[in-house]
Figure 1 (cartoon, rainbow, N blue to C red):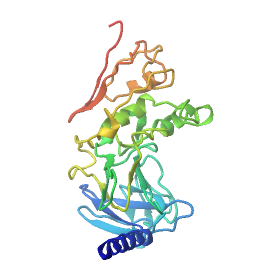
Figure 2 (figure 1 turned 120 degrees about the vertical axis):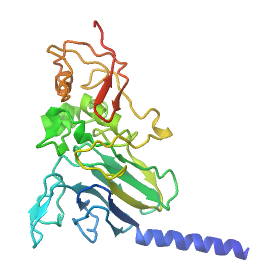
Figure 3 (figure 1 turned 45 degrees about the vertical axis):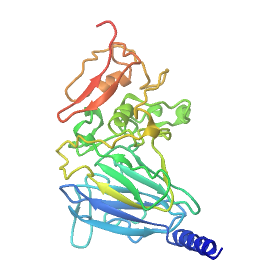
Amino acid sequence: MGSLVASVVCLALLFTCRGVTGASFTFVNRCQYTVWPGILANAGSPALESTGFELPQGSSRSFQAPTGWSGRFWGRTGCSFDGSGSGSCQTGDCGSGQVECNGLGAAPPATLAEFTLGTVGQDFYDVSLVDGYNLPMLVEGSGGSGACTSTGCSVDLNQQCPAELRAGDGSACKSACDAFGSPEYCCSGAYNSPVTCKPSVYSEMFKAACPRSYSYAYDDATSTFTCSGADYTVTFCPSSPSQKTTRDSTPVTTGASQGSGVEYNSGSGTGSGSARGTGSGEVLTDGSWLAGLAMGDSPRTVSSNVLFLLIAPASIILLHSVSNL
């Protein structure tokens, strides 16, 4: 009886400790360049020790977040700051004009890691490409219970980005919403529901490359993960040290809970199983055919048995069947 009471007390103390301290977040930079992480707490959550900082190649830094905290992290690249900490970044800039973001979020395109720490029970987390992509990122939980699945995007999408989504000199890849601003891509207006907003050709491209990441606003089923009582590591360029000009050909492996990891929906929505229209429809080396296909400018009918996007060291290969060839 005494041992049972002792066990209960120990478990209670462990739970209380987790409830008070929340979780630690460790940022690791395996890129071959400096990354400046940004941190934005959601409304109602306190700011962490820093809202933005320099993370040199091969270094790491940890922060403690209280229970119930929610917010997002991202990496800024191509930054230039003077001795007083004033400056800006080429991608993921938060607009503060300083190293610290001071309550401001990332300008898209930017790869985002989003967290909500549970007050009692599960934490929720995801890696999102809804606002575009600027560098590879992996989230891993440790010391927790439950599924605690790692998630992220380890592929260098900048090297696979269609011309019409390419930002600036190719240092980031826009979302279709950011590039075109139309409601069907932004899941806004009449498309503001899971029923009316479907995956587009562009979001399917992101999803095929990074099956565990959010590819569009309603991509919840295969993109949100849970863990209880864990600490988390956010790694930039996780697969291997790589320059932004070098392709990372090792995507995050999909888990059993995701099935195949790539789901192509049939129906009438943009980017669904079929697309019809008029125009050239040829595949260009820069991938710009995607815009014509997504906007209905292809003369060919793409059937619903589009197989998948294969990420290769030198190119993206779209395996598909085309009628009337």
